[in-house]
Image (cartoon, rainbow, N blue to C red; front, top):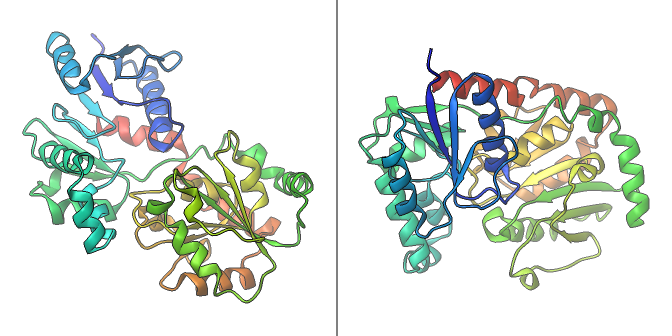
Length: 349
């Protein structure tokens, strides 16, 4: 039997975010299932072991369309918004909804910018593409947003929650107490403090300003907030002895070992991958109502805040990480291991 052909399109691979990780796992999974796979990207450096075509000619849309016309495939699976897909993973969510979250003035200002106008038009055209057979989303939140913004057939939308490397990170989870002591010693902080963790690039979208403002209302100062990620407007964010701005980190596992609670105050996140990573490392999670990852939380593993300051204070009182609590939280997402996630995607394809 001739292997079924499939083309996966992921424009950028250099980043190390959730979508890039999903692309790698999905590509490897499809290869193992015997698919005739080609990965199409604009990055010159291919993923190891994955048959890759790098289209460095600009614009990418024109180069990709030309290549696909010469190399037709029954399945064209996109990890980004594109106009020539049969299957699309809406990993970045609905841009029209994100702009609404900015407020009236910022939304109006953003729509004047060519970058946002281009994304909105591309998004609209992608959802109206007659060749599009399936739209994959990571949360019911995003499904409802698509339906509310665009005339899409609801039957085309499939909800498959994001996956996490649950089994792979087990050794780091089992040694979190040793890792915490080592990192506290490295930075000269007390392991007895309550340690909060924030991870994200683009602080405005990730809601860091809301988090820092909420901490101003906390009377108990026996905490440390670890801030990982990059932002070009770092000077806008107020410093404090309780805040540790660390910038981008090659290895964030030690900070998961250190932290008691992960805070995700995002203005918009279709499904923040750090939600699952934190849970798999045994952290209680405080989530924004605008993070699709909230759907995997229970009252014992996390909370969705209405009042962020109150949520922070409550977590300090009740959710200090312990061996028993962390094991319970970790086991709550065992069923979301990447192997199950990839199996669901492949079955749908």
